[in-house]
Image 1 (cartoon, rainbow, N blue to C red):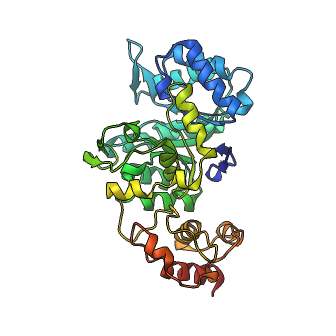
Image 2 (cartoon, one colour):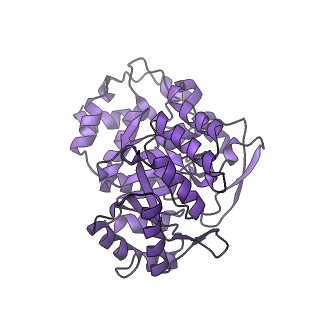
Image 3 (tube, rainbow, N blue to C red):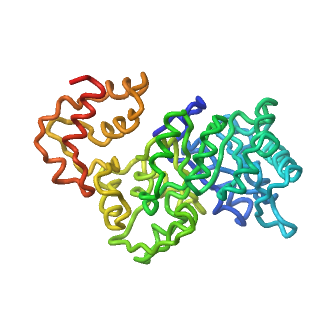
Length: 374
């Protein structure tokens, strides 16, 4: 399976990892079966916001004896109500109790990542990011060795950007899918994460499953579009491979965490690694939604083949990342490509194929100037 670095954490995670929300309420043996299959397949990163005791017991059994194979991401602020159903909380004592419960039921002495859970409004962010709030408490838990890294999960660009700017957030979990491509500020947010070395976990790569449904019209964007709900019409069926390809192509994304309710859905996600470039091509789906900014590269490589064998999507991704300067890591990534931007013969074939009106030839020339001075 493809693996990637998760920002500055030093953790290596599988590009396709696992969200576990859709296992809530499933029988104990069913949960163990799905998670065990994921571990057997090599998946390393597991998002675990769920606080239901039975769920945690089953997950603990699934990871028992295999803790060293998994990166476990817990959430500070996830609890259950008196009826045993999930509930978000900002009560410090309750959050601490449920984090202790996580460690106990998962039979571990630490979480690899501890997320400040589900923060979307400015008022909530004010409270969560205070020194005497969740961030301050998470920093103390990190100092005590009870978590390795601190994360922030949310659905709105503004609050996520504020969290990243604190300098204390190691990992951001944010919705990244085809329906939200043109969300204002999203690209800048991902750039900022890359600049600061903040790892990005792409949640909701299937937009809560809506992208995979047969219905041609779907609703999207309630949270991360500032409360606006859009009606989008699909021009054709969309596959898990296309959804995952889009999420994993975005700047700074370390892994995507599709929710898999059963072995069949897990198999669909795992099949991504064996799919062809043609099967992963999401350009038509994105263009059909008209959720893009004209002239902005989406790194889909729909512009290929290139007679000079330039990986255009990767070249323009590196160019975008170098907007504030070429770092040694970016230069190394550029130098590792088999063909460089300076090999461009300006044939223009890439521009005729681009669904998004990108002035590719000019941008490739910019990359050549940026990375080689050519």
